[in-house]
Image (cartoon, rainbow, N blue to C red; front, side):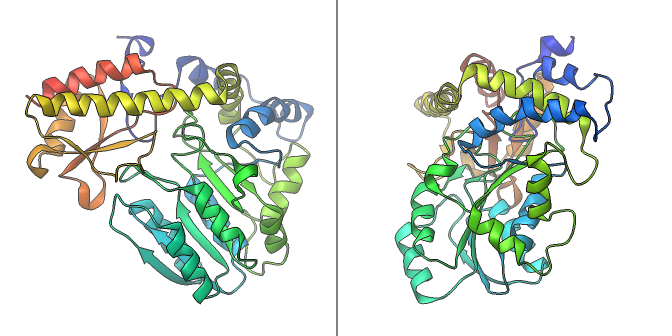
Length: 365
């Protein structure tokens, strides 16, 4: 089969499927990163990025993984005080570990995997202790849990010193997110998730409070200096050589995203989530015994973590699906044997998802 014939079968929760036209855009000839070509390229990219984040502020484009911008968040956003890390899975835990690795005093507020944090309890914690920053993962890729970013942002805004630093790696581009309206101080995502690009780029928006914190930061390093990244970005430049081929792909993809429109994109992700839930119900009506790991009412529209019948057998299921020519994700970390994950994000459609669900149904027999 050609790549085009197999398109629509890759449902990992990252990296996700990349459209053939977007992949092909990377083959354009190279340009200098200080000439007029790069300026035009970045000008073409800007409207789509702002639409994805729902912002009028500059969108930082970093040649790095999203984990790099998680480090940028704590290096620029913590001024020597404590960090409150909201941990409910593997990647929110990574955020706290990054803060600790950067030398910060971190208080981990852990809830069970698959659960989310209470905004009311967060308000109580912030009232009892002073924190420089709060970290969280909006969409926890390991469990499929979705935090209430709007409510949490509202709570943190009531505390002048605390900045809200958000990993939205499987959020932005798929889960409805309104950066300017909700007001997180730093929100980041990666190219390889709901944005549906190859890995290697990361994007973020910083509030004015975050930028002021960055201007006064003493140990922010050089590569992830937000002041420099924003100042260069406003001129459609970058501090260091960017991944030009990936920027070509980004240009092609934001054109596709703008053509669809963000409201339609968000709805398509919700439709895929709902179809996944319906399929689980259908399988259970047939006596299979599947479940959704994340708490009801707090489930991400981009990734569903499905519990296995009997709580075991995920690796074998993933192999059977792959042998049929499709790809899903296994469980992550301590959930590796008991769950599998469907990354219904990016440019996938309900029709493509139905094809996958038929394959999984056969593999479960």
